Length: 319
Image (cartoon, rainbow, N blue to C red; front, side, top):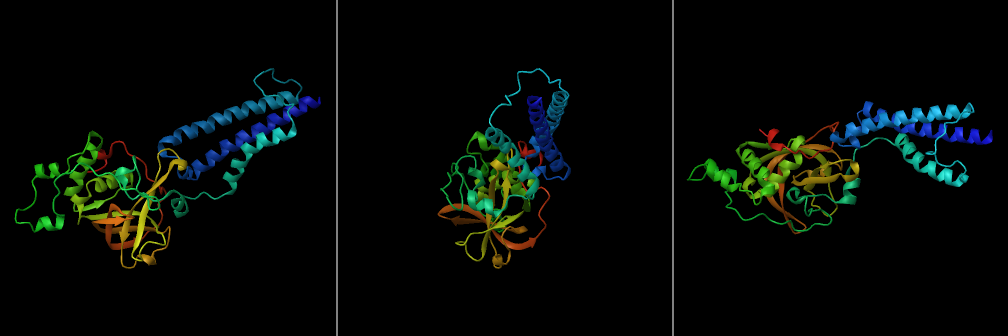
């Protein structure tokens, strides 16, 4: 009888743990905070996992009742219940600890604290190869040399007039096949009066501007993000950045642009802002980067979805 009660107790405990994880996923989904931990394309799998956990929990609950009634389910798949209490505590503790922390701790987006640990990427074009970081920066590799135009402002005053379409396409010649989409995006962005960095293709636009930065000198640009700064930055500087997530918050990496503005120091760390300015060539930690000479900065409310994600067909978004 004692063995039956012990077996029933363990099965009830497992049922509660499984229901706890299933319920936690449901709560995150209902409160729209699941996006703080999982990329949108992975959410369907997590939600399906919650259903699967619920089904397994029901199965464990049924087995617990059968054991309590003295009719345990004959199955060799269950682990032995005769292990020492310490081993049981350790095994269940590994499952209970993250579950308890999940329910007790507030759901918050990643912020400058994580940036300080990972380092801010200031060169989006080389993010897949060697990141240019605020803390641990390395000089990014440059694309093959191409003929660079004058800035958009100086082109307007050029006696030769604006460039032809073929000339522009030549300016945005892709250095290799992997950058062909960036080159096509560059042509589209070049024709716009203002480059608006849409969250849907945030990384793709920054990568395009970074890869062909000399072509965009003087071009007006607008983007949103949170404020990040270090002590060694000048008083008129800060980085406006966002976290890019591929799968989950564990692989999120911060990317941003160095902004220069006379009253930059008035904007606190982690404050969300919308920056409008012009693209300029800059240098940070001996690395060549593009910067934004801001003409206007507006404080905004943090978006409900603070992260950005890779887009595999950016040209369909950019018009």
